[in-house]
Image (tube, chains in turn green, blue):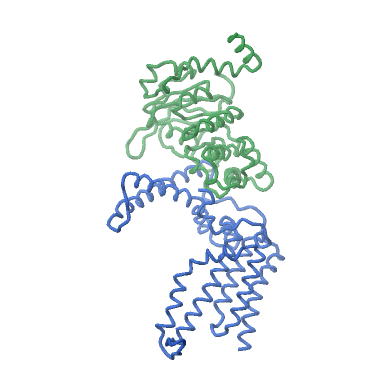
Length: 271
Length: 254
């Protein structure tokens, strides 16, 4: 794989202070512009890995490099790493802590030193990207859960990250909110790492998937191939929803992504 | 949760009072309250002047009397105390409708009643015309310690989240047959408070992690522009100035 790399993780180990081993030599490489799903059962070490990407957790062996910059311990490096790695946490109520949507979106870029018109332009740009411009001055707890999650994505986009990391983006969303979020995420021109055990969502958004189990990367490949391997999934406590056929879904996705010819050929197929 | 429990005291209108910067309103409200409290209780008509001033402010701020009246009920316990004082007070007594009332108690009751009511009305007017968010911004601009304003800000944001959590826990509890109507059934409620505390603690940790991930380094970025002008300060200063004028005149004439 050549070309610029957004994220490079090498030989990452981590043991929690209580002795619980969370990561055992994780290697992961995400090229710029790619969308990768990080799959794994509860307790596989997914969240631990995510918290290493921006240096919140550290201290084990191995390295994390974001856009060529190694995650270090000094203040300046950490500040730049946290700009480059935008993490959207699972519960939007954890992310949105300020009284209005605009203030919360401005929090990250303001920490980077932006002020005045430039800051306000950043906020507008990020809110527009998630379709929430009309809610600029609203109070977060008056928004629906799906809207709050979109604002949470905007709070991170406003920092213009090198890589966007989403922790369980589809959790607790109703089907319409889930689809709307997928449309928004697909349109974002950023590198994306999506942590989830919502396998159909991974399939819809990410061509490539990585399976993490017991602190190790146990599989890395095309999402459709991984999901079609029932034995692999079963071995790592992953399951497709009842009735979901990955091959059929892949065909539907291919038809959708082939813009002009798609509908015509579908009609031909029906005729 | 429309409306939000934090916004019960705010009246979403547009008026000259609503448009004034929050720091100016806070300073004026504190100053006018001090003037009222410092007025000797015997200069009765000064309090009439204050009442007219408060009523004028309510008109300018487009706050209806009924709205103010309902929220002023918080002072009911003090009213009860004020009404009891004339009966239990010591010293000289007067007879009114066959009741022996203490003069000292009457004056004491009147003092609590009138100053309390005026103070509550001024605070309510401030809250009605200023959002909780703006109140914090105002306190911040008045050089209130950052740590205090930050804690207040978190409270405004997370109060509803916590109330929502407490409500869901309560529903889950009564759905399993808990019916805490008597004191000895409070065990479930007390355990719920403990669980709520733990949840709040865990949430605090997650919020902090999310803040760190967006470059937080222990200092909140400064709040936006829109600081009060000298003209706005002067305009707001007329309120305590008028009150002081009324008070001083009343004292001099009595």
